[in-house]
Length: 551
Image 1: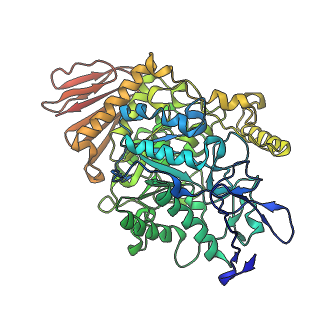
Image 2 (image 1 turned 120 degrees about the vertical axis):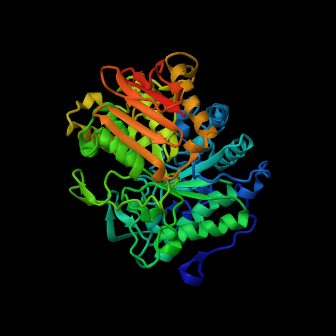
């Protein structure tokens, strides 16, 4: 190869088109895969293969796109959504999502990683699609199939770190810097010498999913770990370039950030000094709901657990907005301004992959609380002012857990992952044998959804409840509205909550005895987990139940 302009090395190889295998030998060293590899057919340690994205015959010419704002997201993991664990198999289940009322299918990371099974957050070839899922052509087929059914596609991408096996980037240039440290070691180089090429590598990757794979949104993993002290933050650059591509393509393109910062600057326009994200996840709402429903107040739930915190997050988004966070040992966050920051800019959820899979045994909330309590939690976020997100299987209270699993071929790495996870939970009182072995194939198998469950009780009842809530959200303007100033949430006791939005009033009773609530004049029961009959301007809500009233 010869050194070209701006420290880029180039070579022209005649007839090296689609399907050609190739690798790079640096200074006579072992062959390495391409940092921009479009396909890794034999794994992340082997040569790359040229993949021409333009060869796909797209069938979605009539697709006009779907903004993330106010859409119903559905987060799924390709490897456990079906027993086959492939994109093509997942596409065969899309009708279930259509019937549920989903707008956006969010795929957990599909970038190539080492091994057959994994969560995907150990990706190392970020331009390639994990070959066991079907490779890049299968992703194009999946997006085409989703668009044909009116579903947008969001792709979870990880730019804050790379996995521990198959990461050869440091051999090619200053992709990492010791200027900053992260939980995964040296930070991805966004503001040190040579960072302009690293930033280009990230932004080009994002634009490629939009342009060449027709993806509609990206979920950006843990953006608080993108340490960038340059004058223009990487996220602002990505936002502006995404907006330009959106104008070019004539369809909305969304960026949804996962952020631990509790800072509304994340969603403010770049022209106003913000980072320009379309929306961001709201873990505080999750923590508030989970802690109140389960009674768990350990770890990062320490400042949650009360009904007052639930009311606060439903109206103000963040539990911590500049006040002291006991878990972090510091003041944390900034307040949301309801006049500027609308609810649809924040994703609300009862479960997600982290909050289930990072529990010791991967137990879902349905394993910890009564069906009525899950029904109440679902009603609180699905009728909220937020953009809602369902985690796969939640809608039918799946009995299968969703556990942490890996499949690293390197036995030493596999043992380190196993021992590290068991040691982590041993600090919280768990016995090692009770923590599933991530490397055991049975751990992944136990996490695969059981598609026989939605058709039989008690799962069918929960599925009907979710469908009814989603249908209500789709049909009622008051529930679609995202003006946080119009949300009223009041705790009428430690186990009772009243939420008012326009014509609708949500009544929740988590107590052990029936609770009496006032019913607005002319109010009628629209949805109720347990049958109730208002009388004399009052309604008695049974324990662990929720009732939705419409005037």
